[in-house]
Image (tube, rainbow, N blue to C red; front, side, top):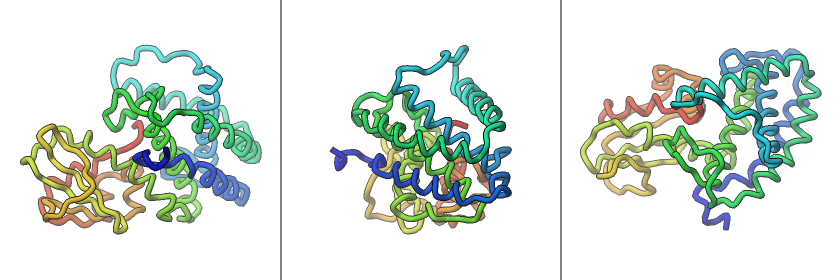
Length: 274
């Protein structure tokens, strides 16, 4: 069945977990306090947030989700609610040692993976992938979204300590391919003639965003010349999609060919709830 899944990621969770635990156990006390691109969060805060993700998923497996959110009437309302949840958890974990956080991550990782493995990839997900504009998502996309969370938060830590081990094709390509799914929704208000194609090139991997009669959509192949080509470095790409760099900063690490105006919307693309 995995061969039918558009973006297979489930098999990579144990790999990410192993690399995470190995890295955390190698950190010095000063490493844990280093700032990250996650705004006000230190390395320890990001590790605590990763633990929160494990705990929430395991609680869902136990049919427990906590108190339901109140007064969520819009996307900004949802983002504010999630930001409050994240902040409360990280603040509470301030009194927990790095060693304890690492031990709990190691203990909960397999159970988290077990939960994701139990999901029918083509059944409706509990939560939609809102940054892709979906009101209902399938579990394979939910799992891929969870993979991007695991990947980019670990990469935030590695970025802080100077490690790019996650930027291998095996681990990076599924993450960036999932991020790319945000583009049709991000371009929904961009007007262009039917047949317009934007070529996105990241380390030699290419995606095509095509303007169709029904709107923008991603296509696998395009033989003719693209209207616009955007070439961007991996390090800038993941930080753009996770809102760690501003559009202006990302453009400094990119090459634009063709219609420059069509490229501008790309640099405001994000694939996180922010």
